Image (tube, rainbow, N blue to C red):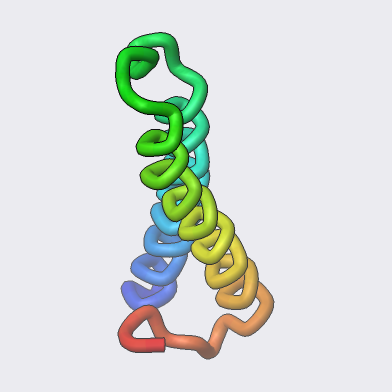
Length: 75
């Protein structure tokens, strides 16, 4: 198997996993009882950008799956 193809496949899987990690982290931070002593506004300020970034990473991963000629360097 081509090493470049293996690298691209591993990076796609890692990118997808990290995308859902960011979304999960944002929801956990917003709704977890462990952070209930923290101000709700502050939790929202932290979790909303994490959620948006997770959605952005899902979009980028999807476009890389649809166009396999894209590189994983600077987009």
